Amino acid sequence: MGEKFLLLKQSVRGASRLRLPSWMWSAFFASGVLACLVAAPVNTQGQRRVQRPDSAPSEQVASTARESAGSQNFDTIAAAASAARETDKIDEAIALYRQAVGLRPAWAEGWWFLGTLYYDHDKYAEAAQAFKQTAQIQQKAGSPWAMLGLCEFQLARYDDARMHLDQARKLGLGDNTELTHVMRYHEILKGDFEKAQETLGSLSYEGLKSEELIISLGLAVLRIGMTPKEITIDYPDRALIRRTGLAEHFAAEKNMSDAQREYDMVVRDYGKVANVQYAYGRFLLLSRDDDGAQTAFQRELQNWPKHALARCQLANIRLRNKDIQSGLPLAEEAVKIAPRLPLAHYVLGRLLLDAGQNDRAIVELETASQMVPNEPKIYFALARAYTKAKRKQDADKARATFTRLSQVEGAGQGSGLPDDNPATDKPPQP
Image 1 (cartoon, rainbow, N blue to C red):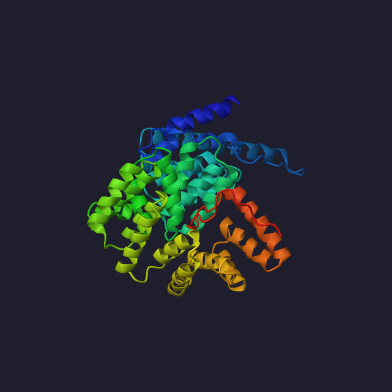
Image 2 (cartoon, rainbow, N blue to C red; image 1 turned 90 degrees about the horizontal axis):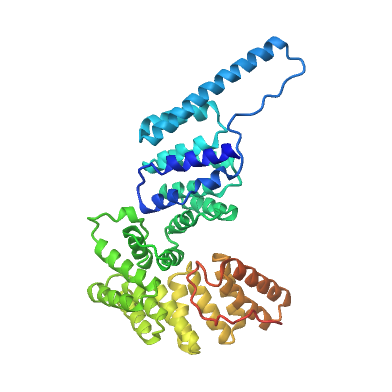
């Protein structure tokens, strides 16, 4: 126990001396994340030698001597690596850690620090290899999987990043709030704009604020498939992205007056730029201003007649207001324009369901469920449609899926599907 405490103390002290590239990395180390790493015992002394029954005494003595010399050599190199790291001799520390893990491949701490040194200096491919080794050694610790995922995000390996961040979440990060924030921040995967906006907005709500976070919010809200570091000081649309991100940051904080002021100015200055009116309309929906939102979505369509999402939002407002007949053409057009858009199929399915066109509704809702298999709202609607169609087994299955996903994720998380059902809704019974 004393040895483990000393290891943790040395690890945290060493990590705190790193030159960290951003608020995320600094907060990550400050939180004491290495407690997760050393929580599970790791054999830092190598594998125990299994003595063969027929080993001669001389062979045993020679083997023991070699192991002793190797252990002393490893201990010397490991100590030198730690000293180099603590004094910011980065290149020297990397070389020494590589030697040490070469001598003892099961040394999780060495792989971990090698990964942090690479990550801190933007060498994400090398860092990913090191964190992967750590994760394979300590498969029940969440932190190495999380860092592997963050490296993969930086390398644009988005599918791998999501998989390994999910693995980290399943294993757990203990009380490491800051690493949880970092993981959620990096869920801004290209193309998953709704999930990104939700994730980043939750960070704003929890009191986090940085230039990088604001730029990321702007990218998500304006549906621009770029990462924050690509938006340099000289990037032509940086001002638009930043101002929109700041408006959304205020909205996520529930500071609606400042959000309204910032959004009004963004619309005034950039009202004809793609997705600006759409972003404003979504904000007005949050403010429960349906009339203002409809005006913003209609302006988006005037600027960009093929904007499927604006049609979906207008159709959904009509759905909420029980104006089914005027909502149907909007949703039909959205599906034609963007047949790969889950929201379009979902809203059309809901409208068809309320219009009494049950068979068509089932087709659209099943299409949406295939595109977004983890969205509770779709299964809620499917349960209704199957019940009307007297398909009891399918209805039961849809209800069970709705209940399970609602418990795991909460309704509407990550899909961008609008809140068209009251929070008190329950899946329909046969």
